[in-house]
Length: 251
Image (cartoon, rainbow, N blue to C red; front, side, top):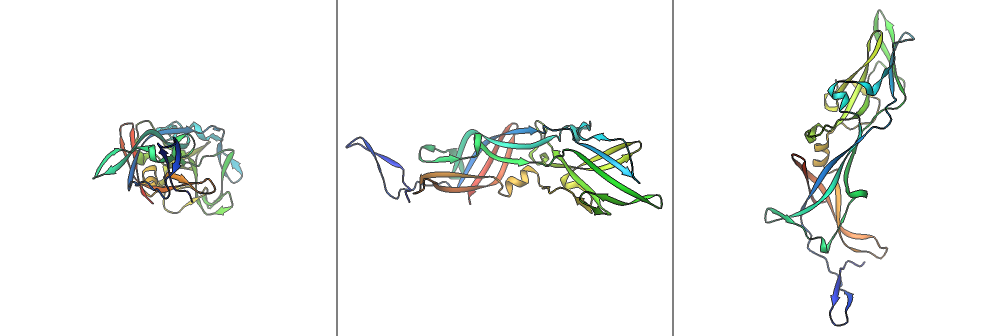
């Protein structure tokens, strides 16, 4: 394994390796990031409530006009590196000199992407009346007596708090002669709900604090040309107006 950085040899003007050189790695680093929301592109999904084989009027899912509906039409929110990286020294943060390291991020300086579940096509909720009540509900993929919820999209609004960025869910309701929907945040779903989609109910802040974002500081390459360095895992995120700082520790 070649874990050295090149050292300039003044005698012959060439770079020569300094064997087994490993730079001092910071215990904690802080990256400045910006939020990049990505809108749902396909908004053709419809929902319908059907009772005893008779369908109410179809509803275009992404034409919900209340505040939650308008601001929950995102398929992802990205945290993108904005160019400032610092290290913790003596309980204070100072600029980290990257002359000895390569900061490894995703494409286009991506630090982390939070993806959301949204819908395409037609979603149907069918009910059979039992003693004048809609007692038996049948929903894809064939769940009986369920209170189904689907993923609607991700919530984002410029200037919103990080804990507000989360998966939004919906249930299909009836408002004869129309089909309706009820939107709710992931952490406010009624007990007993059946999740039709596989979704996470953690918000962006919770995910980052749980270590969902990872970066690497590389200081060399191995025999296969792969980077050699230190992985860091996120543990904290703070927000000051539009400035977002993500804290990483060795992991």
